[in-house]
Length: 178
Image (cartoon, rainbow, N blue to C red; front, side, top):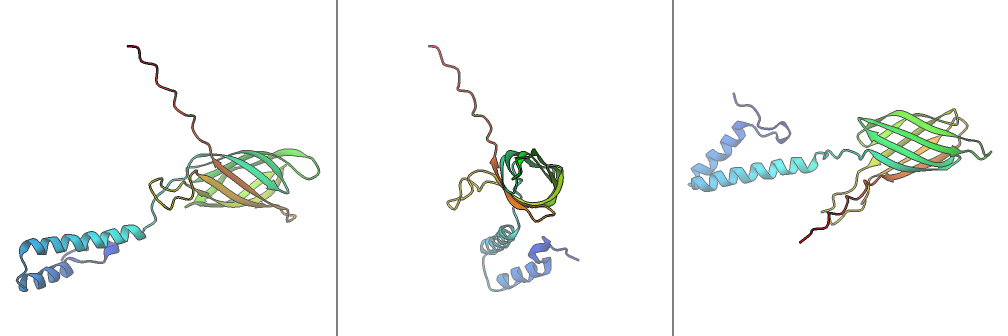
């Protein structure tokens, strides 16, 4: 019994055998039979790859701004399947404290979970965007970014936005002596 080549393709050995049988009986040359088989397999496999989500890990570090009921700035990280937030924030009364979340689950590029702001529990939900491929003519996102909303139990809301921390540029090459 013949097994499928690739489950998403749903092409079995019998189907390929029947396809080649029909071509051979129609007096097609062996080169064209092989070329047609390879071309159809590549086209089918390519269409499956185009439909599959491409793995694009989120960048690890971000500088963030917090706006809304709480305002401030800080940093965020997204790696290992978790998002962490840490920012110094101020409430409308002028109290200053920390907005923090240590391990909000990251599922795909979305996250949602508990955090604290000035010692009060809040809920944060958002997403992490990796930069678009630079070779793409439709590149919109040039830097990695993070965006989220927060809400506290009293209904106070706001936004958290950030961009990827860029690594420092490499040092210039040493001057050459001649």
